[in-house]
Image (cartoon, rainbow over all chains, first blue to last red; front, side, top):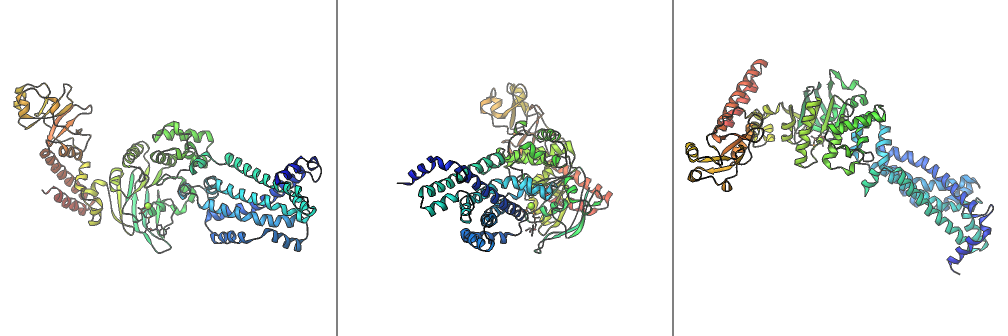
Length: 223
Length: 395
Ligand SMILES: Nc1ncnc2c1ncn2[C@@H]1O[C@H](COP(=O)(O)OP(=O)(O)OP(=O)(O)O)[C@@H](O)[C@H]1O
Ligand SMILES: [Mg+2]
């Protein structure tokens, strides 16, 4: 039996499409964890990145965070947190957010820093307030890069959110964890396939967001 | 009026960019700051809109210390144009121009209408309105930059090397456009450049700065050329300042002669009557065709195929003595051809006659300088003008 037969078997089994352990339900849970973690990470990373990028202060701290993040094992972190905090949603969210903040923070900082200083100078010279300079001059130009930071954070969350299953929560990780435990490889492969598909869907969503939110003047400027 | 009163700028690293600079910038005129790279032109300009704060000294706008005005209000009363325009790449051209009106709370429609009006003012095709900056040439972007600075009709316009990134032909167009705009709008313009020719062309008054941010000379362009304050200014003006100064003398008073001018079908008697070695041949309408050797012309009908080129003619009164001299120098016969506004020959003039006119013009300007110095009690300038003129006219 090869992987494709597993996949085929998993998806054609009608039992996998219903109930609390059905694909729609697990997919919904997974998307919920992802959105929650991404929203929390963005709520921390975006303002911090925009502010440090605009003022140019805190570059060293950002560089430190970027390096530290690369060395951080998210699964190890989960185990550590579960040991200290016990089971629940919080121990899952912490590693996911910790994982997602650095790419958002670092790319946002870099994106704002790399905006051409001439229009910013012109804006300041015409008497624009600093907040307006950030949101109306720097942000629209930095947006494609900021979105790419959010996108890689989102993809990392999607694949890492499978760890929720280890602390008896739902999501697509359930199939993988349960499948491994039950030696049901059809389930394992099916779960992994769903995670991969969700990651692809995430990329598509960000591509669409970029088309909608980024000015044609900026999009074409870059090519 | 903007009064810069012994202003010094020392940057945190100790660099003295501007050193006890005092300037009075009159209203409704173009004041040019010129000087070699690093002499503090940008710093001076940016102190006027408080993008840079002076270390010492004060700057007064209409008698009021600019420190006492809220910084945003001050900047909104001054248009600001920079090199490469600094347009907002995510906004269309009309939205770029409408930035300040929108910021001041004008409605969207009113701001756009104003932007459209300004596009026309600065010579931009209305078809460009919906484009993005990347779709415009450098010269067009610079026009948008000027329009954007003018959008809320500020009384003051600060321009930092606005035309230095475009090619010479486009630059000349932009300069002419600025002079035309200034005729219409009468702004108080402070213009920074490192190009002395641009300074002389645009400036009502020119401030020459030297290394270390000190003022070398502050004078109208003609005076700068006739009486440079010292060796630095003289070097900065370049080797041909005597020639360039002729731009400020009118060619109206040149004595033209029509003796050597003949039409293509002239008879031999008319040709023999003229006493010059060359004859300017015109068509029946009086437009120049070229120069003929008198000997050849006298021998028979003029062969219009074998004429010497007449070169570029000048228009007396409209063109300067410099243009007239240039025509004479470039002419194969040494004679400049004068035409009227429609291109018909009004006469010719020799290099000797132009040289005579230059001497007369110098004498008159010296007398004028002396008279003005007498009124203001500053004999030094007249002396300097005198010395400079003698140096120039001496063979
Ligand atoms: N922020 C700064 N910190 C330190 N020194 C500065 C700063 N800005 C300018 N300077 C220095 O001040 C001097 C004047 O600079 P400024 O930009 O005013 O010159 P400029 O006349 O405009 O030159 P250019 O023609 O090259 O634009 C230079 O020596 C420059 O290195
Ligand atoms: Mg400069």
